[in-house]
Image: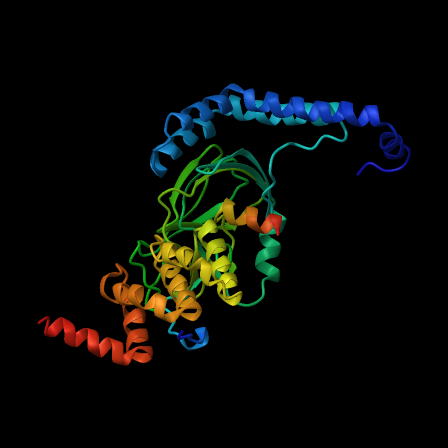
Length: 332
Length: 42
């Protein structure tokens, strides 16, 4: 932290502030022009319709380009040494466990450079309270450990999570391997069914993580670390979760003019988003929702959604449902 | 117009939390930079 006379002088000197801001803007331009990063951008532009595997192959080239990564880090160190007020123009992605910077930050790919200390890993284990989970992120990613920190990882596998996923207490994850990792090692993790746990580290881990939301499983799943039984699931769809909350708000506000939005969300790709939209729709305007509910009970691809829709029809629309069934049995 | 109380409507057997939410603390892996970003910004 810069305090005292130096900071007071900087705050009083507008020209100096402008000069430092210009330096930061220069950094942003130079950083984007680093050949390895520019090549990644160009590759992504050429793969606009590419799936997760194609995007991660492009990321792999960047992750395994040691001189390119060094150039990224050197650029930041150089800027910080010239300018004590320098802040990288990169998003941070940090928790109590790690500190990270996004070297690439796009809608189809993020690449994070991160450091994780052995003390933080140990503290998490020692001071953790309550149940703990082995988590499967649902998204595909690549890890490259620049410094492995003497870490020992356990590798876990869960039943593959697809569009027809049903959370069930009988689901279990299983340990597949426990081994040390090496400096420079790259791991490909399909978060729909693979995960790892850092069991131990003796020095800081420095790693790159490339992550794509493309072709993700519908949910991130958690399995209890002791029993290995399924413990819970959460959405892998950031935008979808926000839209779901907006539907709830529109329903509370009694915005019937928003009915087309509710209808649109009934075709959401994830089963839980479709049923959330239907519940909100029914609470907003049950008569408008009814034909869609019937369609959902008959034809939704997810068994639990069909069952919930059928249950709702029987419980809340018994007469209409009976008439409909009769009409179907006796069309003339 | 018929209005239903949302609390009376059935829920799916599989409960799915919002993006970035967890039921239990993660045991010690590196799960998802996207979730980390959400945590970092909140």
